[in-house]
Image (cartoon, rainbow over all chains, first blue to last red; front, top):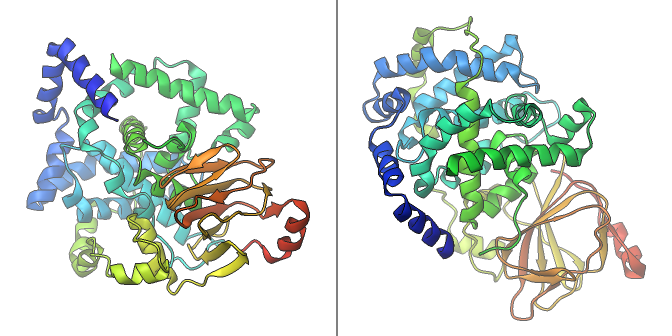
Length: 214
Length: 231
């Protein structure tokens, strides 16, 4: 670990200009959504929440409908409402220094979807006694502050460069996130060996990382 | 630094929310020991965030902002109950649950213990004890395994994928030594013979997809006692 920190420090010293940009990005959060979300957290500002609602509700619905697992146009509104309710309730735990609004809302949406599907599944029992998504996908385990400086940049780069990935790599990543498919489901659907799917996903990730390190 | 981690593919599926919850539980437990993997998951979440940002919009039709606010006002009380509460389980109690081992730091394990108290330990063999856990899912068996210091576990094969996270102490097998926080994934066909280190008991969280098959003569004798019990 020490070596990694040391390397990072060295590379920053070697590239002072870039380093300055990173520090700047901490204070100038590039998206207005994070600013609005902080207002919701700090002031319970309904006006800000209303703007977040207008922007994110259709995105959350679009995302959830694209997911294969039991969410369709009929029940998706209920889930979207649950997600936004949780965004309002949990806003206090949002920290703009650690993650951007869209990343944070993504994780809230992911956990809400997991609990929602579990609650509506015929195969599970004991939901009350069992663990909830927030226990397992615990937000204190991600959004690491010390990687944050790079994160807003990464998000932008990931967005810009997802489109530059080879089609088959981007397609696999899209299926994992948007369609909620496991690697083996993807391998069945695309009629590819599991190993091929795994390596496409890994190569795609590596390429995105290489870009964001540049 | 830990040597045994979930694969990048597994971490990505964790971030995307596609892992069965029992497997995710193992990943989560590992993350509480591994800053390196935590960072990866954070990065992957950013990727998830950018997928969300670039999704094709679809307008909700069944509710409006005003309706949402109405609902929020109506159940403000519920909201308060959602705020993270201090886990009320006492150090002493956790200690008892694990008998003489030290306290475990993972939040999710503490919660798991709380909903499974009192643990029922069952003797599988002279040096192996097992406590099956309820986790509200039905695809995997989740349990704690405790290997007595220096104790050996009967050589066994894996019919389904078996994931082990070391919670306390350490154990070793033919391929190496595993320490607290290590995440070990055994595939069907991986035969091994784990053994706890001499100086302390080893406590593990184990998640199995299908029954573990014991090999060898003793295995045949012990096998009937091991059954698949997802909770």
